[in-house]
Image (cartoon, rainbow, N blue to C red; front, side, top):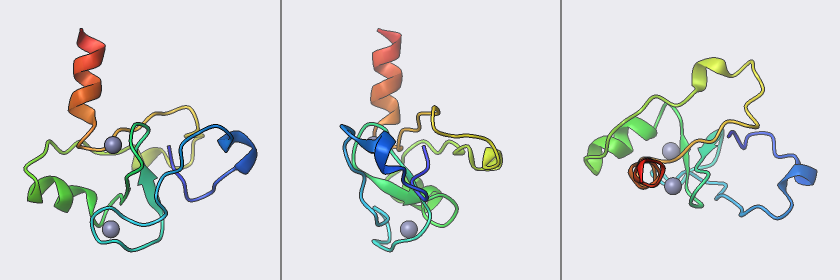
Length: 89
Ligand SMILES: [Zn+2]
Ligand SMILES: [Zn+2]
């Protein structure tokens, strides 16, 4: 999910993601992990982060930005392998 526009009413009871990038520690339009509090710049940092920590990079759903993204879960490169494993078991 995207957190550039935070809807407070739908955010109740949900953990809060950081409002700065987990890679460059800067703010802006970030994509938030649905599993941990990490947030990342989609274009600027996600790929670089994966490269730095040798993680599997998967394109985030940036091309669908015109559509409602509220229901789409996104997991950061750290969490994605764990989620995939959970779904498999
Ligand atoms: Zn960043
Ligand atoms: Zn995560």
